[in-house]
Length: 307
Image 1 (cartoon, rainbow, N blue to C red):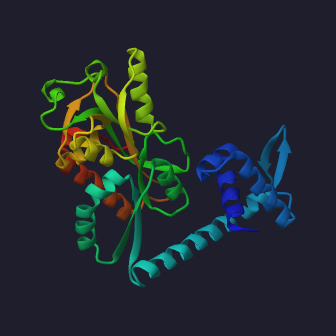
Image 2 (image 1 turned 180 degrees about the vertical axis):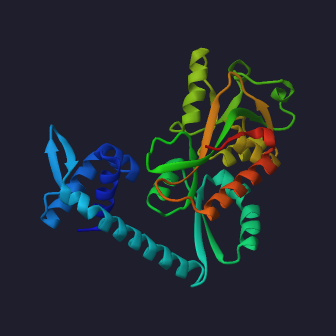
Image 3 (image 1 turned 90 degrees about the vertical axis):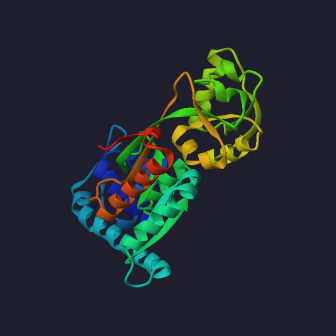
């Protein structure tokens, strides 16, 4: 019996489906089925009834669920205590937030300063990662809060705030496109571009817009963070189409943001682990991050939706 088996058991018992359990744990359905089978074998109890290819919990499984949930809580409490000892000592509460690089580098210094000044008993760990790794960090309890693409398809995550923004075209000062009220694909014919990696949703949407117009972007450089796109654009390497909120956070790097048409909407979500009481400290940290983004990017850079 191991911890992954316990997590798979609780996820299955609380969702009622191996597919839902896999989504919550950020793994595959076959992996969950294998863990459940191993757990059942290790305990030597008939935990599941198999009907028409589906698993159903037995009475023994229902009886064990509270104990297994308590074991997971105890293990998570132990891990958090260990982390606290590593980072902050005995009397400090550890909080961990995972963010895209563009947000962590621009927003978090001011947020960390004010938050820690107001909460001297808190130690803060700021992690940087992709949307996918950020989801996995929250699911694995390696982060208390994360900013991810919204809507998340993972039932193990709960969105505490959603930020809606639009794609913008960023250009260096003095570029010919700066004079236009908005920039469209037709304006970018023959213009060197700095684009995000092909695996990004926004990049796929941009490619689709160009294909609809029978055009191909003239790619000069490909990057994997909005912050890097802004830095290259500021040096005159090309122009880019990026997340409008992140672009405005990076305006002090020397880029001009122009509306992009047709509109490409983009949503982000502040997420925590689902199914547990919301921590007041986590909610406060989320609010402070959003407030600082609004201050730096401007209140018109995004629309805030709080469920």
